Amino acid sequence: MSRRIRMAGTLLAASALTMGALTGVASAQVDSGRAAAAKVDNPYAGAKVYVNPDWSAKAAAEPGGSKISNQPTGVWLDRIAAINGTGGAMGLRAHLDKALQQSAGSPTVVQLVVYDLPGRDCSALASNGELGPTEIDKYKTQFIDPIAAILSESKYANSNLRIVTTIEIDSLPNLVTNTGGRPTATPQCDTMKANGNYVKGVGYALNKLGAIGNVYNYVDAGHHGWIGWDDNFNATAQVLKQAATAEGSTVDKVAGIIVNTANYSALKENNYTINDSVNGTSVRQSKWVDWNRYVDELSFAQAFRQELVNVGFPSNVGALIDTSRNGWGGSARPSGPGAKSDVDTYVNGGRYDRRIHIGNWCNQSGAGLGERPKAAPAAGIDAYVWMKPPGESDGSSSSIPNDEGKGFDRMCDPTYTGNPRNGNNMSGALANAPLSGHWFSAQFQELLKNAYPAL
Image 1 (cartoon, helix red, strand yellow):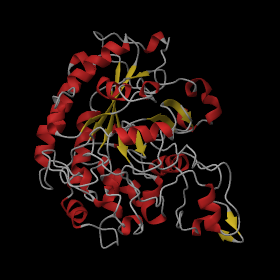
Image 2 (cartoon, helix red, strand yellow):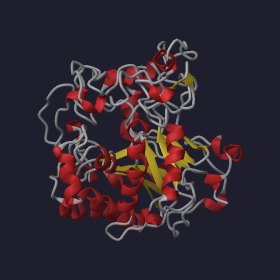
Image 3 (spheres, rainbow, N blue to C red):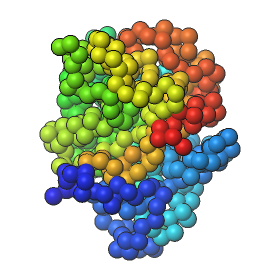
């Protein structure tokens, strides 16, 4: 029986293994001069996880930052130039070399975010990319191929490294929710659905990277406040299957999904469930839940993982949950359920997620660090991860000229009154934010202050 379908209680030893812990499982250790070990069911189990020195130094330089600066975070390859390094930031080879040093011969996970699709992030200007909607060939030959070539070098491919690749954040779900005449549709997303370049790009990346023996592909699957509705749930699983079988790829080249990447949805809401009702009115009818079938990321990730199995992915497909910014601690964290005077009072009084609207995604005020990275924390979940490095901006709060292809999205403007994707509510964003991916000290301090579990 697969590890992922056993009860969580049987995973005690793996669950207790923090990301930075050493393991004494000699059979899993592989010297860099030997052939890579066979792929494992969960790359995080029994492994250390790479601490990015670039991020660690920035975190340690902040007041209180040394409390978390030794945590592993994702390395974002978000433009072609990032492969070789930009502006003093390390390139891919430098990260892999440093990871080999940190590993000291033990299995070690390196987390890469592969993020440069043509027409990238068609519903959010802040994270637009450098490639135009039709530049699929450039994506393949100048972005994916060079990454695959480096990862294939024997120094890295035949080593104790386990390379986790998070494939194209926020891409495939956009083809479901923001196209085809829906109120949330954008012309850019309609274009990307029509030309097929998101599906082709993801399929190509899965095929090329998944052919490398120590690479584990995880495809982005949005989050519960995006994909948890009936209209979106199975449709997104089908789109992931389409991409996983495009451009020569197969479902076997997908190790799993990742949810809540760079987002804020609470890991687990303890003060209410989707099955609760108040005076005969279901929680699903509250303004916050709005007929969604999920109230938190853990329940969504476990259910969506199963949906992938239902549509044809292997039964041991896994899931990661990004917990870098979904702690929602601090003084605003509810200590118990809301009053049962009506369903909205009940949900709003008890929910940990304190956003104005679940569609708000940019530099959210009041957010906090979530669960620390951990392997095998629950049934079906390979790991809690910090794929989004805490302190890196989601987007600028005003227009900033740049050469990174990044636009200005009003959802990052604290004065913005919203659009259909956030129910025409205020954005909830922090002021004075820099470009996406740039260091945002005020946000980092907010995350420290509101961490849950507390630091």
